[in-house]
Image (tube, rainbow, N blue to C red):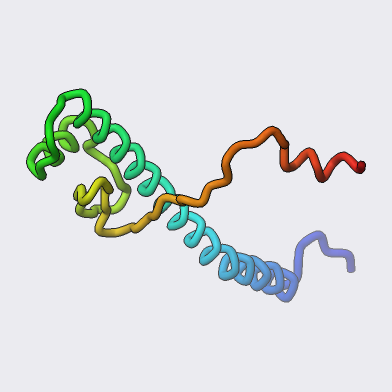
Length: 122
């Protein structure tokens, strides 16, 4: 007899494979989402830090916590995806949730194109 449907075992195997794929992919996707949220927050903090320094320089005022808080309220309502406390301390904008450090040992630009050296054999 030739049937056109699937057997129960075939359906269970397909469901089991799908469950395994879900169990593997959910933690990976969750980790990627958290990393993306952290990157967004850190980049927003860097932007706030730079624009606040420009604001202080242009307005010719010294930093005060009340000035910084007012600056945040007026210009950056939603900085981070997470709810965190943002403060300004010693020239750095600090988030209570994430910590970043500016890379001080960045390579200085030179005349060479690094990826081009790998393409061209001398």
